Amino acid sequence: MLDLNNIKVDHKLSKLYRMPENLQNMSKLQQEVLGKYTQLAESLHKLDETVKELNRSAKETQDNADNVSAEEILEEMRQIETKISLIGTLFKGSVYSFILQRKNDYNIINNPPTDALEQ
Image (cartoon, rainbow, N blue to C red; front, top):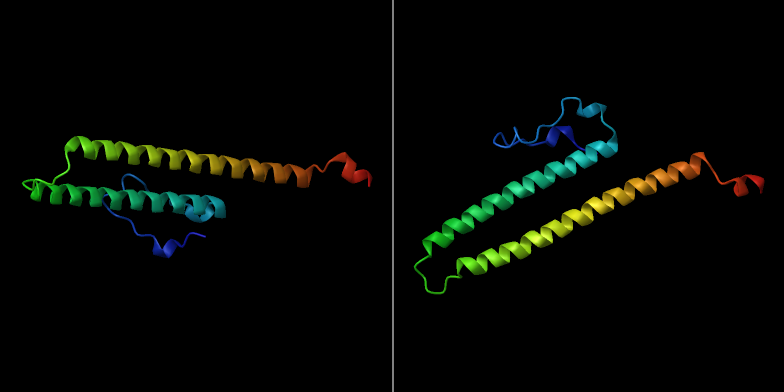
């Protein structure tokens, strides 16, 4: 369950993702999903900061002959983007599968097969 007391809001990002004021009225699953999305947003923010730091350090060492070309960096970034896209698709599929499984379980509990009733 999402701990409301430990939510850290980055004021720069608070406009991008705001925690609903009626968070306590949400179901446990909704709170957990919202917590995961908050963690994802924070991770993406950290990734952005890391990329900016790498860019700054790359500019500082630009005179070095061993630098990787911009084309090579771009190709690596495309590969990473493809992998992130795949992970996102798998995550969406997992959530959809979970929802379908829960719906199926609910239907089985509330509407048992007629064969099971006759026995």
